[in-house]
Image (cartoon, rainbow, N blue to C red):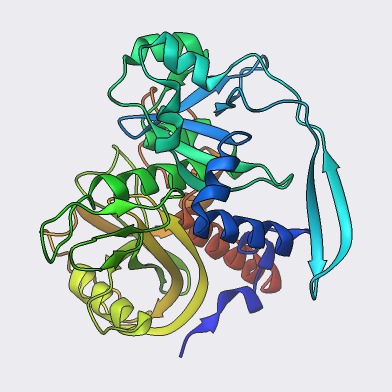
Length: 375
């Protein structure tokens, strides 16, 4: 049975999102936009738009040198107030009035300047809703001139993997979600039963084949990611596709019909030839690679007397045990710029849930050492 790692150690590492009192109102507003095409089309007039060029998000550098997601508006975004209500049992408890301030970058105007009709914004997909009730959309502009767009938008399109190193933590999940939704629509244009084109609804929350009547919804593939420990060391591995020097926790896709526990036991046995004993659940995360994975993160232990690693070379390039000192050093000195030469050994960036697992393990080791008077 899975136990929660959060019960034993720092809960704040996992519970990264806090919900305000207007969360229910925002969620219900978002649900309406997903289901009501007319409401979604109206929301396009006052939404925030994230642009992607061949799935690379548009970033903008601020005056203090920090990169952020470039969010654009349409010409319909003006100073007209709009209201966000907080309901309970169909009774209005609170009402917030927001004033939309105009900005200089008009998405429709930019599209026209680079040779695209302004109605192209209708091809956007609904991503979510800001704390202020403003809808967020993603738009793929890969068939337009990249350099012209970058000049007009005062930003640059960056590969998503590199963007993770450049963006503030809270913006990374939004960038990942935007890319994932765009990719799903690009790869689900036809019905798997009939071969006929599928038609999207306005929000992009589903596609339907009018011939077969089948409705397709965006999906994530479940993946178990596990940090294995023998009590004093943790096991990290790398694949040939990893950046030079990077090691991460073991991971693998769930087979059809498998539970999380079964997948975890199987993957560790397959990849490194070890049998795990105790399993503790840590948290979950959407990961956009290779094509939208749902990461289920766990800690697992092995018998300290049975730690001989037998690597499956078809899966891994290397796997080895790391000490507490090696891990803390890697966490202290992450590679901040992907364009520079990385350290000899480093771990995934803070946004990745693998980093959370490694940080939790290091925290547990530090606590254990203090309890035993080793620090």
